[in-house]
Amino acid sequence: MVSSIVSSLEVPALKTPKVSGIRKKELIQFQKKAALKFKHLDLLELALCHRSYVNEIQQEIDNNERLEFLGDAVLGAVIADYLFRLLPDRAEGDLAKVKSHVVSEDSLAEIATLLGIDRVVRVGRGEEISGGRQKKALLSDSMEALIGAWYLDAGYDKTEKFILSHFKKSVAMVLADKHEKDYKTLLQEAVQKKFHSYPQYVLEKKTGPDHKRKFWFKVIVNGVEYGPGVGSNKKTAEKEAARLAWESITDEESVQD
Image (tube, rainbow, N blue to C red; front, side, top):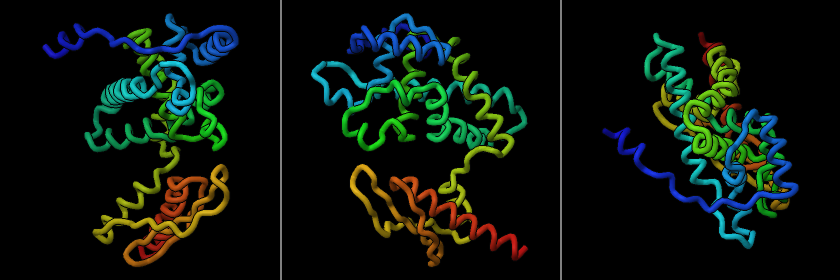
């Protein structure tokens, strides 16, 4: 019943940008590297239009955020289905943890960079100056938008094939425990288990001009300060502080054992 209702809904009209000249050649080259072939090249272009770019141009077009929403859901469904079949003996909680790592911002940004999204995504002048093309959040969002656009253009089966061709390696890395650790999550789990409390992140200082900012964060665990963690944005600095705290706490536990 639900599926029949969904399938009867039309795809809403999208205000897609026109694609011609040099940009068309760029997108054709991008498709070759990504092993994609869009029937509607304007849909691919829309997936690569960040809101910072759309806000600056004199065209009435959409940005890629609705496609990002769709792509996130399709990616989640494909990876969940793959893990459900691949790991029949794993509990729901284990599957959820693996999935969260596979579809994480870090994983998406890495794949986006391998595909060359950082070179073709359209960003505004402010984002360009501040290094927006290398920001993990922007790259991961663009990757999800690309998946959403490909789903609309080619359908579920081809999208599933595209996703698995790029994300199976991420699954294998997580299962082999060779993926990049989410230290904020690891620290929170350790602190809740040991102290029944939560880590607190405190900004110590920030230095440098807007386009080259550095943040210094410490994290407080059960009254003890760790850090500081230093990074080009708050999230990176917090993650570094979390890493320092987690490694210190786990080292202490191993010594006690």
